[in-house]
Structures are given as structure tokens and as C-alpha cells.
Image 1: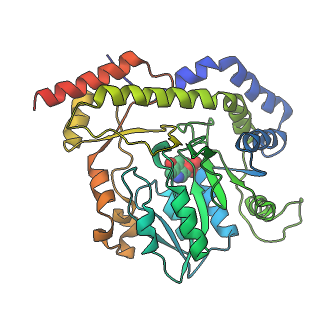
Image 2 (image 1 turned 60 degrees about the vertical axis):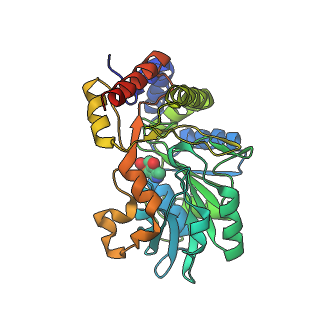
Image 3 (image 1 turned 30 degrees about the horizontal axis):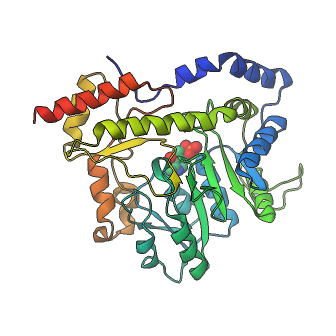
Length: 368
Ligand SMILES: *Cc1c(COP(=O)(O)O)cnc(C)c1O
């Protein structure tokens, strides 16, 4: 038996005629960049989130960069973020000229609010929590700290479309939130795509301007900006998929619960904890084991694809050696990245495949 890590083909086939005609429609209208398709997607996305402003951009990395830049963050500033994320979260901080300051994770694998306090200095301007793997970060505590110290909060929602905490969508707690629609994300385009949500309309105007060469009207460049717009084809694909996102998330969550129930008696495997009063959208289903590399090769020999998100905590990457981060401050992140395996996870994954994956994990531990 073979179990793929993800399966974008099956999802495409389930919507093929709608997606094909949406793409052909964009070509027929020559609506390639900006225009009515991105506008429609923005309207639909912000309506679902009940947030006043949505600005579509070229990808999730630009979404973070544009947000930080328009919040006025730059040289001499510090931005606090988690030691456990994809490099987009921190490289965009550096792109503004500011310095990323890495903070350890809690037992839910998101930034630990208790450790944020001690990382705050006079230079700190913002906090970027990441709702990693689809799990909500502890936003109530983070917002409290941010208010106390007058810091901006930018939520990185690249892995957490429609994840919730205390009855609220993550991405609606902070000053702005950034989304990626990279093909493999819970809501994925057929190329790069992203957006920013905010309740602040003067801020969203700045985002839109900066993403479009500093102009809201053609040839009226009020500032220098960048070119980061959503393509019509990507927007049209996203509009076809958006109505299905909730049910896809429920299927992911249900698959995670099947994994959890089958794995819970296996002492060698640490299953993901879900934060209380939250909805985890399970972009990734991540277990922790001591024998990580051995188990990865064993599963691969059984036809099971796995992945590691991510092999190295951000401060340990060569790109951040110059920061000389005190590693004694990030013990949880260091341990986490040595032990994690992302198991196959996608909405269409069936329970037979999940049972097979778990059987193989059990076989591996029997032979130990
Ligand atoms: C995917 C991702 C991004 C970046 O999104 P792109 O669209 O690939 O630029 C940012 N942060 C996190 C946590 C991600 O997983």
C-alpha cells in the first residue's frame, strides 16, 4: 500500500470542471493581474471572516513584509516571533531592516507568551505569533502583553485558515493577519497567492498602495512600493475552492482525531495536543518520537510519505548565526525539531490509509 503525504490531484479532480472554466474565463477576459477576480475573492474572504478589509497580494511572504513595512517597522526595531516556523516569518522582519528576536514554543508548539515578556526591550515594536500546523497560538495572553507594552500584533495565518480560538477566527485578534494560499496550504491556489486581513481601513489602504508600486490610482505614486499583486487566475481558482474550505478543514480535523485515537495507547509516540476552546485546522498532523529518523525510513520502506516541518529551529539556521541567539532560552524548540514527523494529512485521506500508517508505526515499535 502507498500513502501520499498530500494529494492535490484528487481535490482538483473533484472540482475539475469548475476550476477549468474559471481559469478559461480569466484568459478569455484577459483579466490577468488585479481587477475583478482578486476583488471578488477579497470580498468573499473578508465576508467569511467578518473583517472589514482584505488586501490580496502575490504570496504569504509578501503579506508579512508589506504589513510590517506599513506598520512603520524598520532599522533599529526588534520584532518578536517564534523559534519554530517557516523562514518567511523571520526573513520578512529582516527585510524591513528590523531584527528578529526568537522566542521558545509552548506545549502546543506555538510561541510561549510567558517567554515573550522577557524578550521585550525598548526596541520591540511587534509580535508575530504563528498558528503553526493549524493550531491557534495563545492569542488572549499575547494580546494582553501587546496592549501592556504597546506592541503591534501581526498573526501569521499561513497554516491556519479558519482555525478558531474561543469562538473567534485566528487572524481576527491582532492588528493585521497574513495568509498564504501556496498550493499545499489548506486553501491553495495553483501558484503563489496571499492576502492580508485588517479592521483598520487606513492601514489596508497603505497595504494596497505599497503592494502596487505605491499607487492607489494609476500613475499617482505617493511613495515607492513593490509589485505584489494577486493574479486573476489564482484568484479565480481560490474563489472556486473557498466555499469548500470549511468542510475540508472538518475532514482534516476528523482525520487527526482518527490518528489520535489509534495512536493514543502507544507510549513512544507523542500525539498533538489541541488547545482548549479551539478549532485546529490540521494543516499538518505532527507527532513526536525519539527515534525520528529511523521511523521516517521505516515508514518510507512501507510506502508511506512523511515530511519534517521543519528540520531546524529558525535561530539555528545558518541564516541567523549572526544573531547568536541564546540557545538555553529555546529548549522546547530545539527538542521539538529533533523529534517531529508530519504524517500524511489531507481532507481526502481515508481511514484505511490512516489505519495502515498507524499499523506500520506499531510494527516499528514492536521490533524495537
Ligand atoms: C507558507 C508559509 C508562509 C509563506 O507563504 P508563501 O505564500 O509561501 O510565501 C509564511 N509563514 C508560514 C508559517 C508558512 O507556512
